[in-house]
Structure formats: C-alpha cells, structure tokens
Image (cartoon, rainbow, N blue to C red; front, side, top):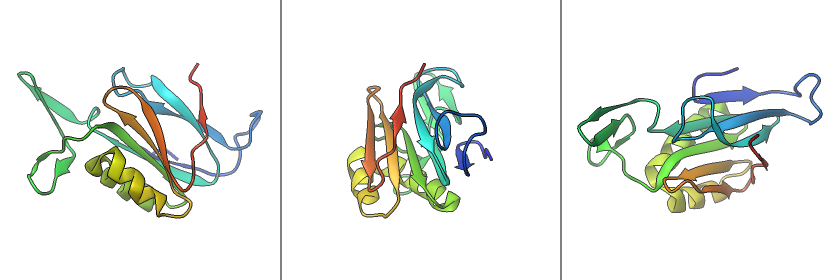
Amino acid sequence: MNFGGNLFAWGNCPGAAHSGWVTGIQHPGKPRGHSICRVLLKNSSISTSAGYDHFFQEGDHVWHHILDPRLGLPVQTDLASATVITPSAMEADILSTSCFLLGSKKAGELLAGLPETGGIFVLRDGHVETAGSLQPQLLKTE
C-alpha cells in the first residue's frame, strides 16, 4: 500500500529473486521517481518526511510545509529528507517527521533507543546515512 510518503510492505514480492520488497528513497534534488538509494523491506512500514514535495518559492526563499513548532516557520536542519522504517505505519510517519525536525545527529540518537526501528537520512550535501537499532539494508540504485 502506498500513502504518498508512507508505504507498508508485507510478505514477498511475487517472482522476485530476493525476500521482501524493494523501494526507492526519492532523491531530493531530482524529479519524482529518481531514487538516491533503494532499501529492502519485509513486513515493515516506511515513511519519508522532506521539504521538497510540498513547498512554494518566494524570490530566492523556499517555504516548505514542515514547521519548527518553536518558531512557526519551516524547520532548518542538515537534512534534505528523513526516512524511518518500523513495524508500525503510524510510528514510521510520526518518527520521520520528528527526525526531520531534529536533524541527523539528534534523530540518530532517538532511533538508536527504539527497538526494530531504522532510519535513512539524506543530508543537504547529498550524503546518505543510516541510523537506529535496525540498520536498513541499502541497495544501489540502477
């Protein structure tokens, strides 16, 4: 099932050579459908939060939809996107937004303390980092 930035993968992809399902993590600097990396999922939920999909531009400033609750303005962190994998779709959605708000360092600390939870962070400089107690199995993009 696909809910926009959220996905739930159950069982195995029919006819695939691997166990589970493969999904791409959107490349923040490219048009929809271009992955920066791919991840193998089985019986888990994945959710991505980012500012590249819902935004408007005013002059040179980009205003995205994830707001810093302290300021009421779009949050500014080192992350271009935060993806979380966990068994619960609701938790994945909540945690991906929380991680985006926290930035990579604090988000990694948060996920490290949660069982069966992993993160894939795309930093603004284009680097990809993994975090959490569940280290996601990243696959190369083609």
